[in-house]
Length: 280
Image (cartoon, rainbow, N blue to C red; front, top):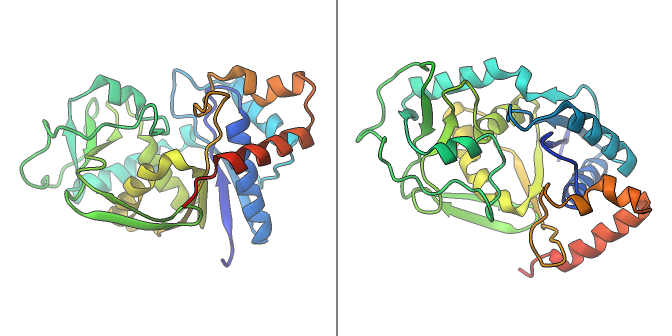
């Protein structure tokens, strides 16, 4: 892969845990193996939960883990104009439409939709127009959804899990891209930023496979380049539950306070990934 550019994309809504460390360490190793560049993106689009103290903590934890990235850090909250412009293009081309449904989904749309907990449900279509929307512009105080091509199979080759296929309209439906308070969705922001940062490979957790299918549709609609994907195996707790920021005991800060060193954490990651890796 020529001119490899990878990225780390944490959200500053809590402390990094062992699962983050595993994915970020994998991304770092990929960049090193390709003699490439690794960038850091601060995905701080959740205004209620994003905290500056967690930004400082994630930078410190990455340095302690030995994950090196190339400055400057990209900050999503500073890039709202680019997301707005992308949403305007989708509306003008008839790929999106206004929606007044589902407060719960609107609350979740700025977060990475992990499949086991908060992935968007298949939309009922209550606000979907019978035909593709006529060209329109973004109106303040309105939510918007991307209209998926029902029945189309979205395929991609994953660097870890092999061939993937999801059917639009069945495996996922029309998804949110813009919220009425002026915040873009995780899906739209990722697609726009990965292109702007010239990312060649996205390394992230296997619970975001459906997000990749959605983002491929956005890339196509916006004329953005496709990227390669590597969905890493997930690390669970002692009960096999996917790690989340509520698992404070497995936060890197907590592990360090318990006396674990960097090498201890890396060995633990290697052991857990060996257990977690699915048999294909």
